[in-house]
Amino acid sequence: MQVGSLQSGAFESKYFLANRTAYELVIEEIQRMVKEAGLRERDAVFSEEPIEGTSDLSLLNATASYEGSYESLMHFLNLTDHSPMLLMLDNLQAAPQQKNGQINTSIRFQAIVRENASGSAGGQP
Image (cartoon, rainbow, N blue to C red; front, side, top):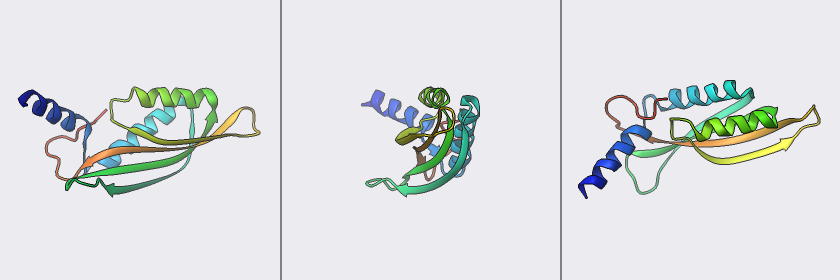
């Protein structure tokens, strides 16, 4: 039980974001990956919703539209998979465009936010 409790606490402190810095950290990490992958961000919407059954956790939803090549999208998804931040890919929609192999995509990420996280914000890249 003690080991499980310690591991749970370590996971939470590493991956659950402090509410005071969550938006900034998520935006910075997504923008870093977009730039590195060579995608162009068109628009983004952020919202927060409580996690049912908890009093201090919520989901930060980040939905954005991107444009780029198929290779850029695959690179972006690989970067997302290897990000030091716990960004959960909730939804992805992609549609080819008539311009030289371009793809328009809409991606929704989720991150866990803790209301009263103490110390430095977890999940910092």
